[in-house]
Length: 68
Image (cartoon, rainbow, N blue to C red; front, top):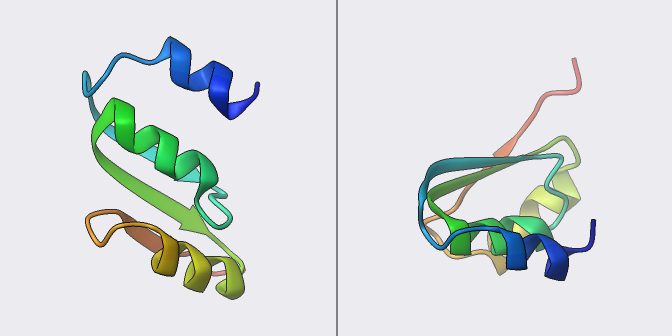
């Protein structure tokens, strides 16, 4: 599903929490921010984690997952 299609199907701020597992640099995480009161992204790749933290607002928690 494309991000634009997903956005049109989500209610605005009616979801308490949303988690983006494998968030990459946060493209879908940004969309989730429109639908949820709290959002967290989880990613294994350190370079993606750094980029997501740079691109996303400080209110979005980005967690680096261990590959172990």
